[in-house]
Image 1 (tube, one colour):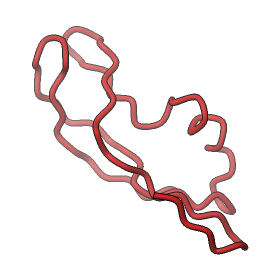
Image 2: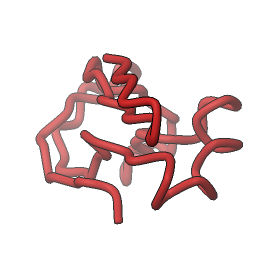
Image 3: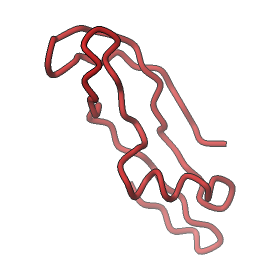
Image 4: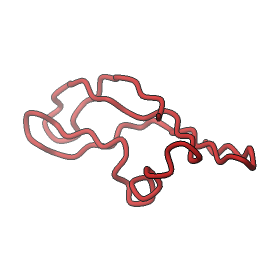
Length: 73
């Protein structure tokens, strides 16, 4: 299960401040189904509840590739 947390973010279009859930850590051995979403940029999108603009909070994701013990930040 990916590590998630809630953050406050500000809409780039209407400047509405709202709370959204983001993924902070992914273990590709356990969460391999997220690979496609990571590649296509569908992870950590925050849709403004006021104007519906898709925002991308500036947060990194730690990706762990097991069993090679390779970690990408």
